[in-house]
Image 1 (cartoon, rainbow, N blue to C red):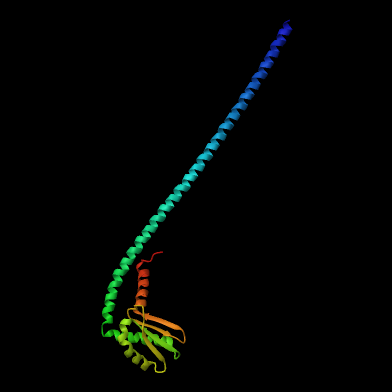
Image 2 (image 1 turned 45 degrees about the horizontal axis):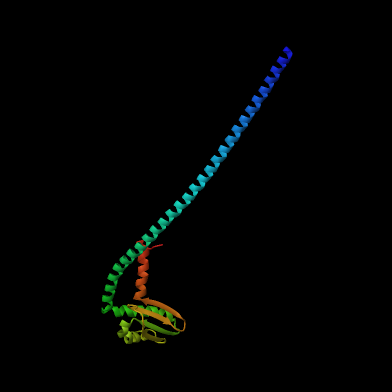
Length: 206
């Protein structure tokens, strides 16, 4: 009887040990699975959070760039307006002085010199040369024609007033035969001076 009791005790002990071992194993397995699930959830939450951060970051960058672009455009528009005002102020004063010069006695000598230089450049002993003056200079046509013919006796020179455009003063010379044109008008000189002024003054806008 004693042996049976001892055997039962040992058997119960073995069974209990195995049961405890299995329970411990199950608990460990459950703990690992629980940890894996938690980590998986954390990863999912982190991924979602990262996506939201990136979306918000992209939106913020886009909105910031849009604001900067609008500010730059507004600044450029205001700069263009102010540049125009500065150029107008300066060149309006210049035009007043030019008009005074055109009315002076020195103007014709200057006009003849410009016409002479331009005709010489396009003529080269060949072709029909047309000299165009501003309409306000029509009074100089005959005198200029005679003076130029004395310089270019073998050339055919026509002198006309420009129609439909105010070149202010000076000459535009065109060789019909060679299809060569030179613009020595005051209008073109002012435009060249304006572009040069913008470059040197730092008022060019890119």
